[in-house]
Image 1 (cartoon, helix red, strand yellow):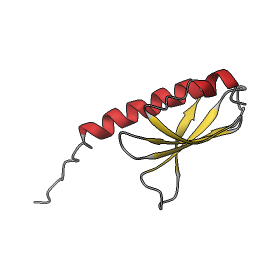
Image 2: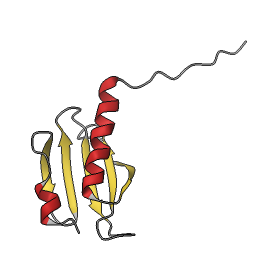
Image 3: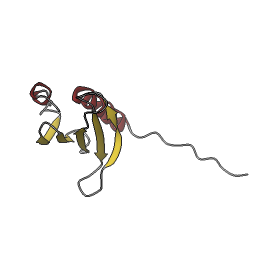
Image 4: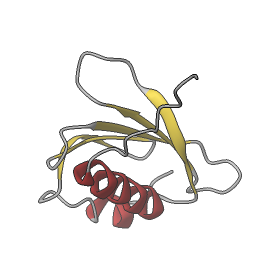
Length: 97
């Protein structure tokens, strides 16, 4: 379960906190508007969680990854936001000759 100390460290300046309890945290990044759902799976350790992500309210979540703790998950989200705000890299297009 997410402990009270970890939940208290949710940054309300960075995230809109929608739900936060011992098993589930749902937040929205104020920078990108993306939604994140963190579920405490307690496997393989007590604080381990699964990270789900979606780009807007109406689309479904997809699994984004896993983390060993809520703190690590929040760091991962902030790194994703930084990457997103730089702009997604353009994939090269191979032309057929």
